[in-house]
Length: 161
Image (tube, rainbow, N blue to C red):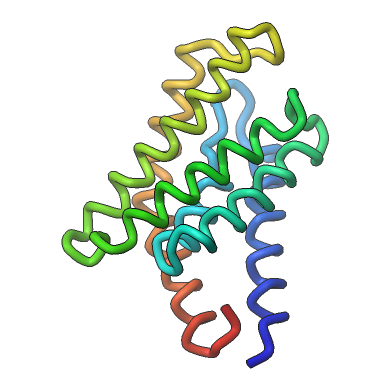
């Protein structure tokens, strides 16, 4: 029951999700790929795993340049999103659409925190840009979220997660 490969796989997914938007086409707001990694872990393993993965993901987003201000706000918002998504786990089997809807709500919450922080004068986030980011995240989630959930299932099947 060695969990190191599972932790390494999640760390690799999170680092990839943080760094991939830097290769995004200019002028197009990047999708929140980090939230999708948090969503996959939380929807499969529950709220405690969702909070831990969300906190780690948020710290990574806060610390990787250009970083986020205030330090820790992103980590707390991803942790809250992980908890929300983990609570939706019990009903996720009821409908194939429910994980996507729960991810949409969590994404709106994370972007809402980003908007409030920008309104407080820290950072920059226009409402139109936040809306475009949310829409793009949901479009990407249609394809990427099932793949990430399958990766989490395989990690669990091998007893790595």
